[in-house]
Image 1 (cartoon, rainbow, N blue to C red):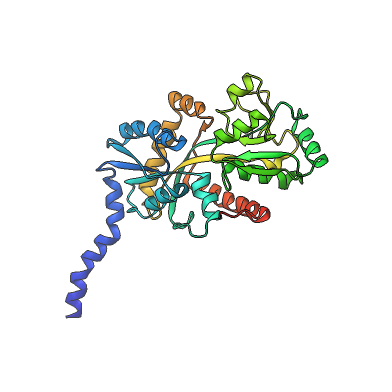
Image 2: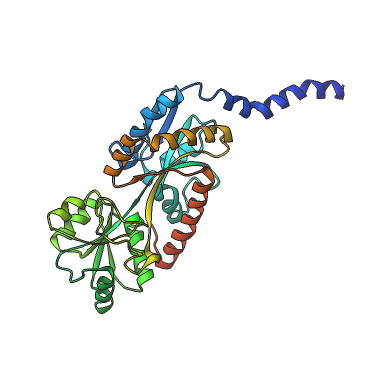
Length: 324
């Protein structure tokens, strides 16, 4: 009896064991969806809608963009984490929803390393250090000297507690041993408005909103926080060139799948994304978003997430940042 039961169960067990391999050989056989954890018009939404048609053509299946906004991106990320690991549900991870938000909120319903398979970066982008024209600083070193001469008097604004611009400011404070005071706003536009009005002195912000303000002479830029100079503003030094390499930081975006997605599926997606992100029209559109289209391997992407969790975990702890 036991022998007959074993013989009857063995084919089913083998089928279950080989099911992922079989599925990956026929992948994709139905539409894919990319969950966007923010609303229409957001940077991640635009990126998804740029690569969606290209991925549709490459995969031979429709790619549907599904906006699931809320809770700082946690709703969409959690939905993606709990989707079947078959390559048909993807999301675009980013510095905030994938790293800093989980670090700031212990109740985040997903684990960035345990619950996701990282396929490839899509883009990276720096921030810039912008100051009001009245600030008597022509360089980062001038700003540091001014901050040390006026401890607690210089104010920097951000779109809110725990956002990337806020953390960029806190990293700057730690590296330069200065005391500049944080003023949180409801959004980046409000912070820039008060910078233009002189109510605050400094913002750490993305590139697109400040380029027209720079051209109009309404702000000064002191450095980019990225690892290299920007083609749009080639005269602007990097934070490392300015003398503070430890304050370098950037924002990244990348394609992510649920953990346990079969490796052949991840490889296929990574191959197609590498080709798509090299297309001239994609590179141009991503540049208009203040980012540089780029790619890497799943191993490199995972290592980046690990290093970012370590880096920003230390900054958040040292600065005592908490989300109320």
